Image (cartoon, rainbow, N blue to C red; front, side, top):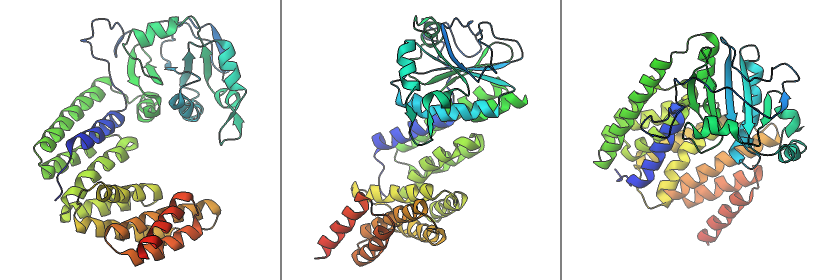
Length: 369
């Protein structure tokens, strides 16, 4: 079993934990903080309501009891904010009768208008057309940002504040993690105390996993990580599975192999997920680590099964199949099976002649010479 370099894996654990918990309440130990989960949501004083769902949503100042709101902070220069826009539009459409989404920037109306006139990449709409589904606003004097972001001691954007039916802050965090929380709030099953109790339990469990990693007890870390499944929302489970896969690869026993197979089967409809799991093994080999040979063989088997099911009926599917086959070529290569790698990569390049795939084939052929 290869030893785990903690700095690398600590980053993986920390990232996965942050994402899977969805929202993070702000620590009350910060003396300057005046807004946290459970606080009364400040009234809104927004200067410019640029879009409002084509008149469907009111220009809110005081939150209406019984209604749910999401106040999200963004900026035209913020790439993650831009990427979140289609998701916000989708959520607003899904919960149109129960939740109102309000996006706020402290930029000028001129800056926002310039962005809205541009085409949003890949969806056939302008930024203005896309964001017209929800309330997009600008508040150049920064008053709303001070009342929310600064008061909660939050600096990164995008950040969303969920305001519940009682007018209190229910959750604070990244808008891409809104799904399960909003679903529960919309159907009346949201329990703030239970949510944050589960969050605390997750944090304690992650600390135990990190302690096991420090002690180089990877078996214990893996077994404790499996406990996260029961307390993780379905939408966030994939991030945990990636973390668990990192540990399983380093163990390589029958339990770890079966975990890899079961996870691959669970995500059999997500070609990129299985490829990403296999790539973890390849990356470890390239970085000088030594994953268990049984895990390499298991990844190879899962990849082959996935490739057989991939039907290249159109260009996108052909490219996907070529990309997954490329991972298999690397699996062959790290096992020293150069001829298998060459034959497989030649077939991959015929489906997807991306520069990275072609360059790897050249490398293989040069090494063969």
